[in-house]
Picture 1 (cartoon, rainbow, N blue to C red):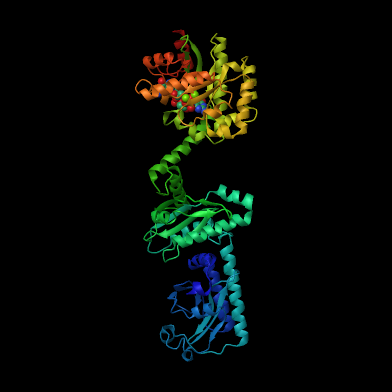
Picture 2 (picture 1 turned 30 degrees about the vertical axis):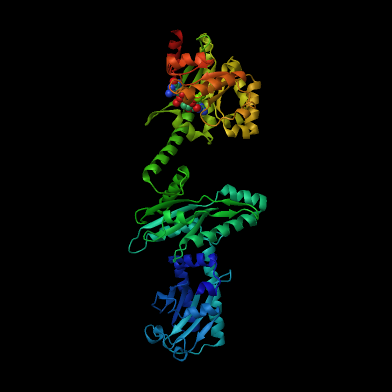
Length: 587
Ligand code: C2E
Ligand code: MG
Ligand code: MG
């Protein structure tokens, strides 16, 4: 087999896969090479062929009508085997060819001279050869000419192959090549269905980490090893067309009737680990997204987008494999659209508004503060709750803009209320990323001072996350808020991540017990015991304790008994617009 003869490696195979495909521009130039060869040597038939383990493909030819043969039938396999010029002046007198079907039948080859096409990486990809129906002598000059022309042809193919279509690290065809192949696939006759698989093997971050600590060579070796493993595991007889899309992300283009599909691919890629260094390996959680499509009806870029969408869905659902699903794709697109709409709403100042929910003191029954909650009236979708748009903004630059918008509105409202003699502090929800912003506390202080207010009027509510404890910027941000006199509340305590031993590192004034703890208080004894002990512990630690989501009198009374300080919830008042809140306060 050729692979054994040439110690085939993945680069040769990747090159062959690409060369086998039809490419009109490339093949026209190859055709020019064959014309030149035939003219210079004075021999009518000439062709360029590419050979893999099973077949020979004639890519361009002069006076030679065969387009493909089995490897057994190919004269050229002898040229590839010996990796040098092979001349057979008369096939009838050569035991290898005298009974050969191409000698005794069409195209009745009597004379053959072939030169191997050796790539710059020293592997043989095919041949440039001349044939005739007559025996010939082949002079030393002619031999030299054919060898030179074969070198030129190979150099051209190398250049074509490397011209932006190859990932230089792994030798795999790259994203541009995938696009090109998708374009070409629409020409296939009869029209076919294809599968495009996106395979995410390793986080780009990991690759960068390896490069940063062990150097580029190590990260490149990792990618090459990964490519080899993929080839081994995915090889199903026919070599699949594997592309490198991004560092660590691959694509596979398959006929729809290929035995290999996304599910099988994902099954075969289980349990792979990557060697980061001599002593460290990591388990790879490979994810596969797949789209089935016919290139006649779907543009290449859209096919890629859909495969990526399926891959993204696999990440979101933490599943190893996802087939493209237009419904979830539509949902994600909608979310993205919503994020764009949100940006427009924040910048254009329409659709967003604040509502205020009172906080009531359980010791005095008086309203002691308000929480500002964001609302969005979307022009098409109507009212969208914050839980459906704030998570979209989190992690984007929009989060800071949104918080600034809320702070600006809340401070202006505080100013208006102060003018009316209403002096209630308002707390605003912010994210950890806001607190990490340099000068955040100072800016809020000057904003308030400009409006004739002091920081005690503005409260800051934030969720406790691992991120806070891991981030010196966040801890510093909290200290600065405290120093400037802002009251800090820890939101949703008991709902998810709570690390009581670390809590003391943040200068918190108020702890807000999450609704999930409070809502079960009346119905379930265990919750009662938990809430009682949590309140008692937090009181011992000198926190003000506020219970969120109080919806009925029984819960209100029970919390009063348990020594909770403040409550917030529909039982007292739902979040209200400023004017409605003023009316509520007057009652
Ligand atoms: P949160 O800060 O814990 O706000 C309390 C949520 O509970 C609010 O939901 C409020 O309307 C709701 N709520 C209050 N009392 C009751 C009750 O008795 N029963 C029930 N079932 N619910 C009650 P909302 O307004 O939908 O806000 C959800 C979350 O969105 C907030 O939780 C907060 O984390 C976030 N959020 C709201 N506005 C903003 C904002 O301006 N900036 C940021 N970063 N987050 C905000
Ligand atoms: Mg809150
Ligand atoms: Mg809360």
